[in-house]
Image (spheres, rainbow, N blue to C red):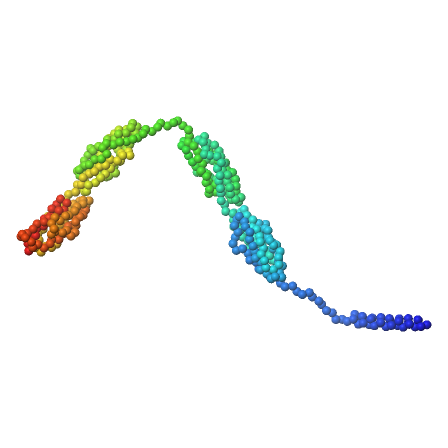
Length: 395
């Protein structure tokens, strides 16, 4: 009886607890209020690139692109052309540098592409290949009979070339090509003297030599040793004709004679073989003494002609009082090329101008005062072969 009562009480307590929980749950489920939860928004990732400013050489090289961004920013780098390779690192975070390799440019044109890092592009430029040609001749020098040989051409693959020759006896094949290649050349038979020509490929040239034709032994040229007799001659100022120079030479030895002076004229024997005679004439000389030559083979014949100068003076004398004074001028007349000098022959005479000259001129002089013994005195001035007399009275 007591047990059943205790159980009934326990069930009552459980029912009451269940109702209480139901009331609490029902109150919560019946509410109409709601709340939305959103994750924190991420920061915007700004990237700036520092690309190489200069173009890379055609042969290729390595380079770097600088990445400027915030420490939290992640980035990825990709090359936009197959000739830009080895990006390192290809991914990163925050500031840094991306290293890369530029391959050799086989083209004769410049090229350009980019490296993309988070939608930003760094421009990469590369120069065109420079076409330089190197030639190597195999064969030669060629015999007189002719023959063939080859020229190895070394050049970048994209470089076109044209082969040509400046000699009609050289043929080349092929005449055009691109990059490295081999050119065959054919040399025709030579029937004359040793000869040379050139083959030019892309601005570079190689010389082709060919031996002379083989023929009969030529007849030796005689030894041409020439002697003259006499080797010089002196003549007066007057004109002269029929003057001679003897020439001695071996049989078959040819020689010529040539005058170096307009006043020496060869009248016969201007050329000859073996022994001979050169005949010449000289014109009259109205000026100073002169020298001319005649070249006979490798020998020199000298002609010396005396002066033909004539002189005259005016006046030929002058008188002075005891006080002396300036004398002259004395006019000297002669040819334009004729030299002369003036000399005073007394201590009381002194030439003041015109002591020497060539061609026409004037001479002046000074006369000293005279108070010595005697009523007068006389002195002279000599101008070449002319005498000027000075007379002075005592004061």
